[in-house]
Image 1 (tube, helix red, strand yellow):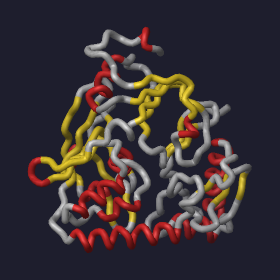
Image 2: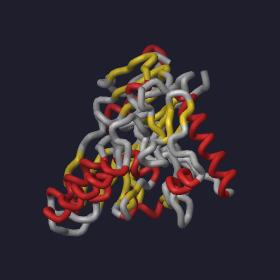
Image 3: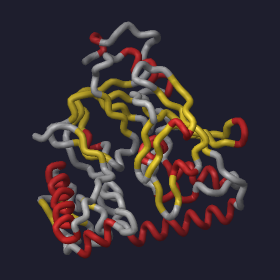
Length: 305
C-alpha cells in the first residue's frame, strides 16, 4: 500500500507515512524487524481519516510506547500506527471525569489525578505503557487494575467511526479485555471516574511505588515489563526462579537476575528470535518443574526471518 493506492480521502491526511520503519526503535526491548509501513497521525481526527482511506484488508498494528510488544526479525508486513505522539489529550470532562486518549502514558494519568486531588489512580504510575495498552489488557500492579476506574471508553472502528462503550459492553478479566460482541474496534480514549482524595498523599504513594519499582525491576536495561501473567495464587517470578531459570541466556537475551519475570537485552544485541526462544525455554522449564503453563503478557507479531 502507498498513498496512490488509498481510497478517496474525505480530507487531506495530515500525518506522516513511512516505509520500512525499524521497529527496534519503537519497542522497549530494542530488538526486532521492520514494519513495511508506518503512519504517525496528527491527531484522532486524522487517524480516523487514515482508517477510512486504508484498504479494509490492510493489516494494522497500533503501538503506544512499545512496552508490551515484540516484532519478529522478519518484520511486520502491514502498517504500524504510532499513537503516543498523536493521541495525547489529557483533560477533565463533564461530571468530574478524567478524559485520556490512548497515547497518553499511564504514569501521566496518575500524576494528573494526584495533582487535582483525586485518588485511586496511583497504581498507574507503575505501568510502563499507554492508556490504550492499559485498557486493552486491564493492566494493573500494586493492587490496582485499570478497569476498576474506567467509566466508559471511546472506540475507533476499522472504518474510522467512533463509538462510546460502557464497561458492561466488555468481557473484563485478569490481563484480558474484549468486547462481548465481536468487533474490529480499537481503544481511542477513556473516561476515568475517581473519588476525591488528598493530592499530597497520592503523590507520596506514587513516589513510594516508583521507588519500589526501581528497587525491584531492571529498569536500566531494555525490557518489556512483565513477560508472563501471574498464575492463580502464585507469582510467575517465583516459579521461574524456583525452576532455576533466573539469569538464563539465549544469544543476547537474558532472564533478569533482578526480577525473574523480566527478560532483558543488556547489550542491545539480542534478536527477536533470541527473546522468543528464551520465552519458550522459560515456559518449558516451569512446565516441566511444576506442571504450570505460564501465559505470556507480551504480544509477539510478524514473521520469522
